[in-house]
Amino acid sequence: MSAVLPFPSPASPRPDVRPADVVPLRSAGLSGHRERLRDRARRAGLPHLPDYELLELFLFRSQPQGDVKPIAKALLARFGSLAAVLAASVEDLMTVRAEDARGRTRGVGAETALDLAALHEVARRVAKEAAGKRTVISSWTALLAYVRLSLQHEPREQFRVLYLDNRNQLILDEIQNRGTVDHAPVYPREVVRRALELSARSMIIVHNHPSGDPTPSRPDIDMTRQVIAAARALELSVHDHLIVGRDGVASFKQLGLM
Image (cartoon, rainbow, N blue to C red; front, side):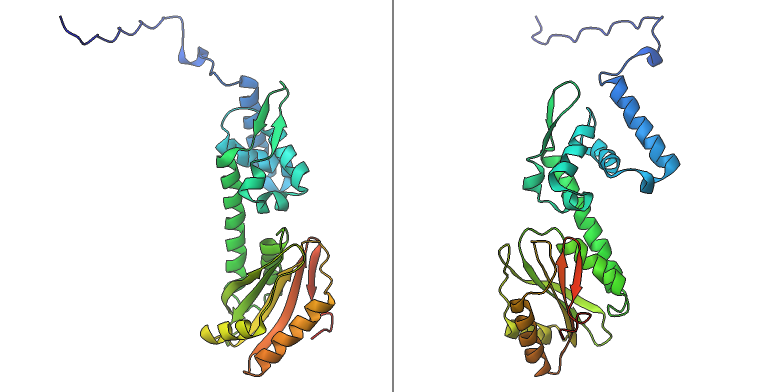
């Protein structure tokens, strides 16, 4: 007797059942909502969608079933804005949970969190490319957009230097140091030494204030003067020092501080 059991023969299809009559397992109502939202995005255009619906469209990819509207709204409520959602860490994103209309709790999940973080990185690189392909000094709007996207929602201070060549085009955006919520150590000699290594001719100093207020502090002003003095000794220029806050960017040059 054979030890191999045969597969059962497939049941004959019922002649009165057509493929169109088969209802998918996922909720037809939720599927209809997704199609309606996609259709509205196509007809009205993405710029006309509110932030939570843009997030919904993105979440459809990583969460192919279920109601993602509560998650989209919970993300915005937790972080405060669409930009802050995209700038959040994977770990913070994964703590967000929401309850749907049926009382079921859903979370962001590792895959969705990574997708959102990747979207932010894509946007940052696009902004960097826009700022770097042109003369930085003449494309000030692109530069401000880039530094805001990079630092606006950072929870800790970062001190960065944009090193420029003799045509004022970007060579490198380098994080020199990371600090606490209100301080990042700066070493002027290291800033200048790195400029020489890169054959840079000038630089723009950038750091953020996690408090949200970009107003320069007394230590910020003193540090800037130290970097300018170290750079001037080697015939290097410091074009500006930008401080990024949640609501704007402060320019030392425009404030008359350098």
